[in-house]
Length: 185
Image (cartoon, rainbow, N blue to C red; front, side):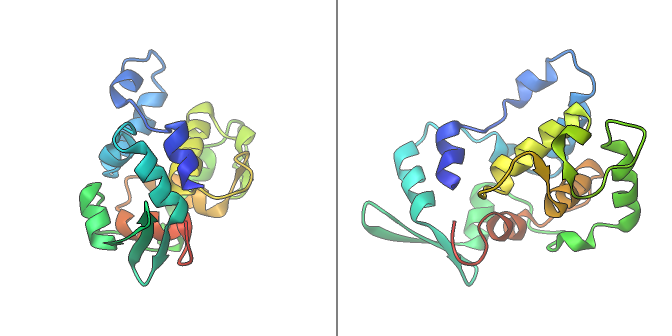
């Protein structure tokens, strides 16, 4: 699953996004930068792509340690080393259920493509285009799991809300455990 992230290169060229004429996209990407994910989401995939793909294909998270093999060699990376390597913020929310309810209420109107509030579990087509794009980024980089990319799950909605309203997130915990659970990538 995560190997599709690597081979499909779902990374963001932030400079080119800011040069686009669509003014509604800039705030979404500025929110992503404010979360501290710029280095992670903008990370080039050309470095050791085969080894990185093998690492994700064989990896799992056990007791806060990312464990994998590359060319038959066991590799263990602590959550803190992983977070430090990708310069992920390690302070803030560790549970998306803690996103303030007033922000979730506001997001339901802000994200909606109609005058009606969207549900926190809805279809992507119900969102404004810039939030569809944010949803796709979350679905294909943070929540790399099997399933429909057309459905906005509660967790993705809560994460999109936190990003949009600049809520501090502990990405070192959220990314590893939300993306791959405690059993594997």
